[in-house]
Length: 393
Image: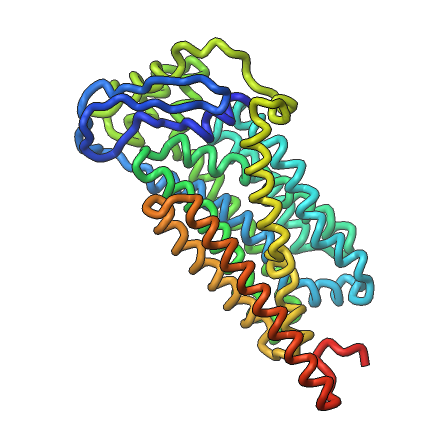
């Protein structure tokens, strides 16, 4: 647990991919240690690149988003095919089984990454991802569908833990914020891909099986890509695998950076005498402020209604009388990708806090305006004796 937290917060704070003057860098690890990371010499141009390996890791983020969004357009059709069209409870289980599995996976992902390494955990994660997608695509009963969704959920739960961890540990300092946000961007791209994949449903009601089965392809590509990707140098160094860490650094940053990065890793581990933190330590007085702020941000994000949009936007558009309901959902997904791309480009320049305040302020303003507009519209229709699209009559 301590290794995971330290990796997320500290990473390689002494690493830079461009020419920098030698300087001392102070980084506070999540377990409270203050570490002085001093580059051993001015940095030269790197002959390595991390971008291909970040791209491979982002296949996990795409799968995360795809499994979230694939049920949006497919729910009505799979419900009819599996005989649960009139059973809202079973439909709810089909949707929520993924989240139940994701909860389990998110709690185990960090431990697996610490034990087996980042790349090996990615490869192990492909097993529930691929099997879950296969069961969903071939299911002849709702029970099989729920099991498939549960397995896929375990898979995406593990990816939610290891994708940002791996990216942060291989990313250079000056672009770590941008590369860190790439995870969220590719999640949105995965959601958009799932919504676009639902466009042929109107012409082919059985297309929903293909939609679920398509997820097997990026799962296999993730396993193959990770077989060719370097392990996290930080994890290798922590395991005492010095020669393998140097080889990974050479692949990521070039041979001219090996001694410098190894010096930074050595400096980062010196002077740490405190025991590793456990789950219950997160609720101690030492960490409660950070944990509370982080949990509140995630909570408010969910309460903003994004889950209803991701899972049910097609049904909502259909109930509102929009004939191109799946296409409308795809446009919502495209807007989601656009907003994430804008935030990613502004994150390192504008800062995280200002973007959060602007985002939440915009959502609050929009929600209030929408409620007022809806009330005005309903009052106007009531005065004219008309019925709204959601009337019970």
